[in-house]
Image (cartoon, rainbow over all chains, first blue to last red; front, side):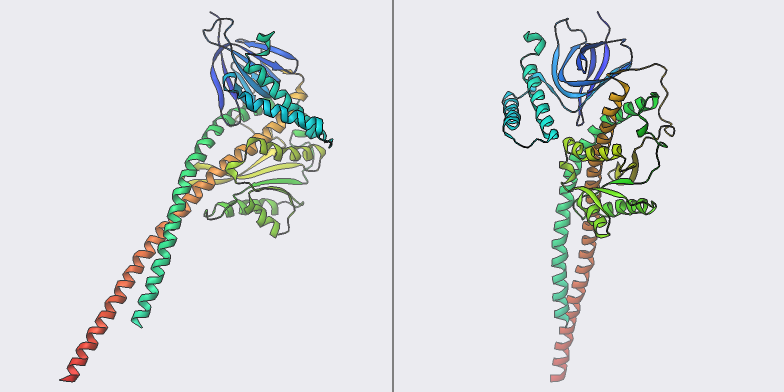
Length: 144
Length: 288
């Protein structure tokens, strides 16, 4: 039985997750990284990506997967993840994701204004949509 | 004479009565809204406490905080005031308390201030007095989302980094209980690290990735965004609480007025009757 660590995932509007976990895998700026109990203290930025959580008492292949919209992870004696938005794989509305992705792509291909802000916003929207699509299908890792 | 004053009183009773209906209905409405706003506020408050605390902790424990965010690093000239008011009136002293506090702050400062007004009341007040309003957000506070506060804070942070403003002060109403609210002013930037007794120094080193600077450049705007969002949510809760109280006392006053008015009315009616009886008696006396 492996050791557990307290994890909190916080979004502006609510506490998204609070519980004991064996392993958290998050996408930092330098790639996917796993955090377990006893990790050295750290503060890392997170990319838009998947969040894999192995809860207390679960087997090594049982993960809960969520899509998160960037943020940071604060690892102390407990782990706090702060993100602007988070969504469990089972809550993702595929139709909405697809329409949002199509909208952003359409915007990128048709719009003639070249405001870098707007372009990066559209790119972020697409990245978020892709992440959510992957998450809804059980995560990019599992698909491979 | 007597009849005309009776009619006057009757008319007044009618008008006070309908006002009472309105204030009573508004009281009920804002009680409902207050309940909803309070639920959101409590949820966000719990989280924000965490997150701001953890951010503050990081600030206090790293010697490598980019200098521009620390107090005493540059002279404070232009101050940006973020003033959170409501968009609707009829909420007692809610807006005037904020405006009073904000004006006091602004007048204590020599330099020309920069005002960001959230809520139309504050905007109108300062605009009328010739202050420059840098930007304004007039949506009702309970409908402002986190995304919108992000948009609000972005230019503020950019200006801070460019050196156009040297201080960011947030003035809002803080929620103590449904019956008590307090105007607060918080300096968001620059950080005053030494004067924060709540935060403990940590005894372990913390790994930062990709770099301390990158983490801070992410965290500072986040911190500002979150503080603004929290203030907006809190202020919305206060607005409803203040309005509920104001409407409650208005309803009470209206009822009191109705009581005394109906007393006057009865008195006037009685005296009219007495007058008539006297006239009849006097008339029949004279016929004898």
